[in-house]
Amino acid sequence: MCLGIPGQVVSLGEGHEHLARVDVSGVGRIINVGLLEDEALEVGDWVLIHVGFAMAKIDEEEAAMALASLQMMGGAFTDEVDAFFTAPSAGGAAPRPVPR
Amino acid sequence: MRFVDEYRDPVAARALVARITELAGDTHFKFMEVCGGHTHTIYRHGIEHVLPSTVELVHGPGCPVCVIPMGRVDDAIAVAETPGVIFTSFGDMMRVPGGHGNLLEAKARGADVRFVYSPLDALKIAVDNPAKHVVFFAVGFETTAPSTAVTLVRAKALGVQNFSVFCNHVTIVPPIKAILESPDLRLDGFLGPGHVSTVVGTRPYRFVPEVYGKPLVVAGFEPLDILATVHMLLQQIRDGRCEVENQYGRVVREEGNVAALKLLGETMQLRPHFEWRGLGFISQSALKINDDYAEFDAEERFSMPGIRVADPKACQCGEVLKGVIKPWECKVFGTACTPETPIGTCMVSPEGACAAYYNFGRMHREAAEMVGQTAGA
Image 1 (cartoon, rainbow over the protein chains, first blue to last red):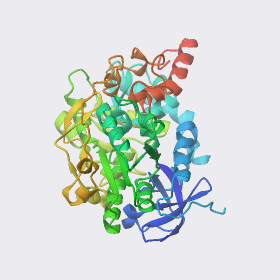
Image 2: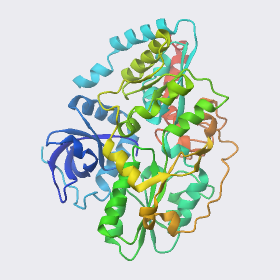
Image 3: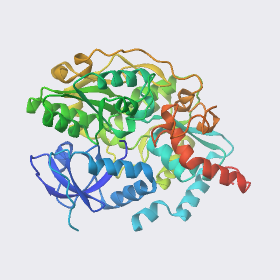
């Protein structure tokens, strides 16, 4: 729950205005970006995601480090990412893979 | 990975350790990392064995799963076992023991307990199941509280009638204050939490230097972040400075996430007091849903036992959470209490000090002992 997962914004304005599609390690999911509305998020930006919400805009470098750290966590990361992808999507849309 | 290598560069690490050793001199320094994520990094990378013996890191209460008292888990189970309820929780909370078992056991007995990744997932379950009442077990510091706040606002906007939140959100500043007031712990400074600070910013920590005369440096989660933060703390002390600094500036801003803080203020209010596992009752340390959103407050909708349950006698989570003892100094660590069959909460969450040490730290420690190294050698 406390693990911040880095994701890259693929598209904005999914469903309603506060939703965005992000790519985490090649898989897509809808997240809520309403808490970053002052950040003028754009497609391609990286965000740190907590429980389905983008909590901070980060740069690519931080995203790469956060992801590598999470992968080193092994089981804890796997559980969090499993939850991220298998739980019903926050926006109501079913998760689907993002083509790379 | 290029970026990662820069933050795990052994040459840079050695240079930092040399500076830390020099700055520490012959004095023994004790710094607390408040955040469970930092504890994890420290054990994962064996940082305590890289630091000189003069610098000791103690692990603080910054794992929200670990600080939920057993009585609140029992309350959650009572709600989950109410007919017509779908009880939703983050996966981390499922195995946390209350006085009467955990949520997974309640599920095995027939309660409809489901794990969700996000509170909005819980709200979606409510929308999809109008004949049931869906309760979300909200836990976490300011890192996750804003997501609950957004969910409350959304539930109200959608006019959802069958959804409520069992709010157990806690705030980061009061436990730091409680630790500073604790007579059995002498600290020289803090490694400030990283992710919580993306929301609250760095200003709320000013009382640490101003009132208690201890430096605090907000830290990132890479091994070099931890070393750089220890270095900054020692540099402050040697310069005769005492202030809040931000080592994690690439993510954390001084003002935090203003939108998130505003939403928290609109949907929640401070409780007069809240019990923390191991730390006891701390005033104004937790959030409850405010009157404007009372219709979504599970504590208003359900009668809960609300019975205080003492921690198991054998379990020393309290001492671990205050940094008074190290995980391996607990009598049941690794024997009666393991990640598979946890007695205490510190062993449940992967960010709990005991689980982090059980999974990673002991190997570093055993390896260090095997080759006859002492810390800092």
